[in-house]
Image (cartoon, rainbow, N blue to C red; front, side, top):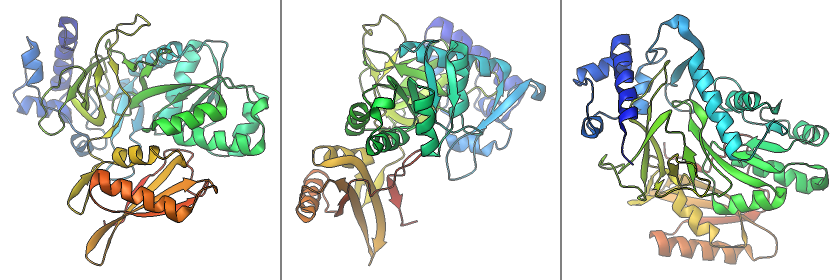
Length: 410
């Protein structure tokens, strides 16, 4: 997809805003000699921005409006490095709520629903975004936040919640707890709006079957409003991205070259109307592709495929480049294994070692299962990991995002 005249005009307004604000990002554009754009080629020559750039602007160097217009800040949920602080104006907050309301509507959620919100509130953009969209829709928000699973389930039953908003990890944890307690007949959920982390087909299937609900992938990141900038509809042909607020590109993460629709690469986003902290050609590091053609629902928003991983989550082990998604795909080929796994990488006796922990039920031989998984990894990736098989439920469950890769070398 190519940038259209309307979007190009909005980008020019953003460039003017950024340069005149003399914020951190505006100064970088000025130093790069960026002026008004007149064509697609001009746009594609603009420099990319990265999270490392935004960290340099800490705390409020990204602010592109007078401080008295800032009504809120949010911060990225990352646990390493300097945080990224994103200021929001009143209009930014309203625009985000409008997009989130669209997400609920695309999922077939109405003002008659009761929306059970478990993502965290606070500096992280999650919970408050789910709530703002819910209130604009006119549905009943049940603002639980994460944790206290006992209370979650009690409120879910008492309030007859119909929609669950959660990370995939917490949705799975709740599904398992509902099954353990035998209370599925007291749960009224019909839909789940799931976001914040990549989740595989096996995990999706488990949540769907355990809870008996329709599942919708929601997309977003703190730097670009937060969750709610895109979601799949009932036809499940990819996540619709709201191109009246954002311009979407897919690039080759190695070369930065723009890829044609249908090819997998890294998502790059430009905010078209954001006031507090506009971003131009921001590299998300999320891997997906633009799905060609039109969705059967008739909406013309561009669509992206599921998030397949991140361009920066590659692990180098014994000279081999490995992505967590490759391990996940291998594990998903074994029906005896659950969707949960953990990878630990360590440096022992002068060499790198990968340990893979997987779950299965008690009907299989654990040693034989470990051998088969190790052989499959060896044949597909090129080195033999240490595989430890444990009983179902032994690996940690998370109320937020599950940490599946732990690199103990650093």
